[in-house]
Length: 109
Ligand SMILES: [Zn+2]
Image 1 (tube, rainbow, N blue to C red):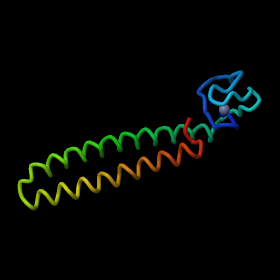
Image 2 (cartoon, rainbow, N blue to C red):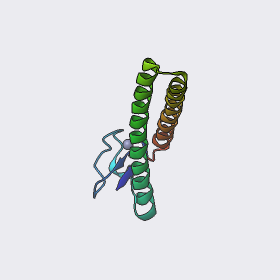
Image 3 (tube, rainbow, N blue to C red):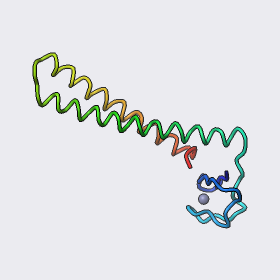
């Protein structure tokens, strides 16, 4: 695993590329990631994938809640669906923000 020190791009390759495919930096700007730092990158990728999955689920929860709100069976159900929609939205936004933090720090290849 190699990391471009100019743009933080991470590549899963055996050898550093001649040129960074993202920013065009030369081979010398690549640093090999091993052991702990490689593990960190892998963990961060896994976490981001989970966060994206969570985002999708929360979007589904929002859609389900909207349907429930539309049917509007009784005040109890309406309140529950409204609450579910709100909380799903909060979780979705927080997950997105967290992914952006990881990407911003260059933890994400
Ligand atoms: Zn680069």
